[in-house]
Length: 242
Image 1 (cartoon, helix red, strand yellow):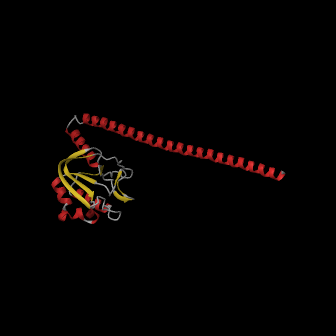
Image 2 (image 1 turned 30 degrees about the vertical axis):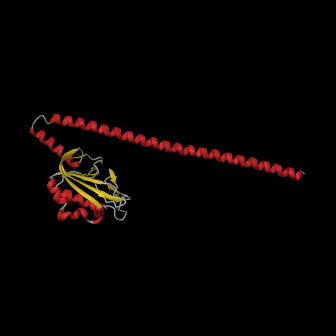
């Protein structure tokens, strides 16, 4: 009888311990989930804060640029020398990609070919490579393009193109997918630009991975290219004093 009572007591104690352990595990799990959710909330809040800070800086920069423009225009009213200096400054800004520009030129649209089932026919081994895209950009510069953009990312003297992962990175400003449509805009003499990219009967538009894409070239009387979103740095270059 005593043995049976002991066994019952042991069973009750084990049951209570099991309940306590399960309850403690449940409490710890809730606390951990709460911490994870709290951390996620903090990260999202920080991201939103950084986005807001970036927008404020962009707006402040735009406001300062407008103020500077007014000061320059006021200064150039003095004479021809000041006006020439202002003209050179405006030209430098356009060439560096610091302002929106427009003019005649060409628009090159590169679209992945589709098969009869409507699916993208290009796989990772036939996707557009950085070499083909860089070649087109170089041909445009060689044909005296004055401004170039890729999917509205402005090319500047410090903008490079590099394949990384599943994307083609355009400087540090953005990226484009080789599995989606890519639009290249260029401002310059539209006839010269067209001849430059179509050299040797469109060879430059059909070679390599471009064989897996439809390439359309349009000559336009006016095309707009946005200013760069990439910061131009000059930390190491210095003028040489004569």
